[in-house]
Length: 156
Length: 156
DNA sequence: ACTTGACCTTACCATCATGGGAAGCCCTAC
DNA sequence: GTAGGGCTTCCCATGATGGTAAGGTCAAGT
View 1 (spheres, rainbow over the protein chains, first blue to last red):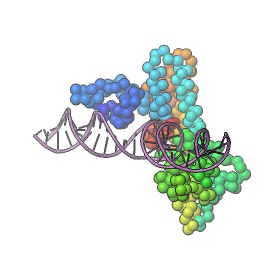
View 2 (cartoon, rainbow over the protein chains, first blue to last red):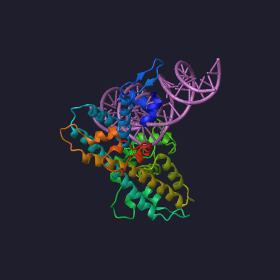
View 3 (tube, each protein chain N blue to C red):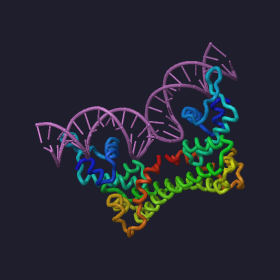
């Protein structure tokens, strides 16, 4: 199995397979005489593991931990569970931050009549800040702002 | 006002102010004879606008559009509202993707007793794939996977 | 006047996971 | 033997942000 076949079989792009090898997430693959990487089903299984963990939002760093546990026959399931719970918590935080942004945006969008006239409460809010909004100080977004940017919430 | 004061007054780091200038998001600031950047209240207001838009999760690209509308006295509020609605939609998508990850993880974590024994349904799921899970095919996460990675959902 | 410390300047590097592309080698089918 | 596709490595880009280093500037205190 060369890298293209392993890619199709695992759902990980060839580019990423090489990358994972380069950062040591997976062991270096065998090579043919010509220098082509060669993969066995064992390695494809490993790649699938990684792929699924990425699909659940785990960072490569966390996946390293998961792989170590997976390969440790004397692991304790508590350790695996803890990593999963951490991931859940981190997702929760980010979801809540985005939810807060969305709530604020929804309020603003509702208040904007969205017609041909230039007057717009959305722009007004951006200019004057949330403190000048029509609602009485509830539902502030500022609590989320710095954390939000720290968590990388912007769309790429 | 030098850059440090403008930073404090706007909530945008000096580093970011220079960056926004370098990419043309804001016009180049005036300079003292010594080369120090100088800011007026008008420019601080602009920075605050940007800061608040970032807090709502807008990308720099979208902020460019918002700024253009803001400075266009003949704008139509419909245009502003449309950008806001797009942002809401994009947040919705990403939230839903993360929610799906979280739901899957919660199911798996619930099924894991989390004790000293090595057997772990979380690892089993990562190895065998979601198709081998105990639930009957509902609540699949795969639909989200590629989009999830495309949307940059991993924790940094 | 001189020093000190805080501030400014630019320039470069790092993040994180991923894709794109170029230049060159290899393999298979015709 | 050649054409097309796949492989190799190497470099670059993304997006928004922080860090650091080397050097200039300013204001206050001695």
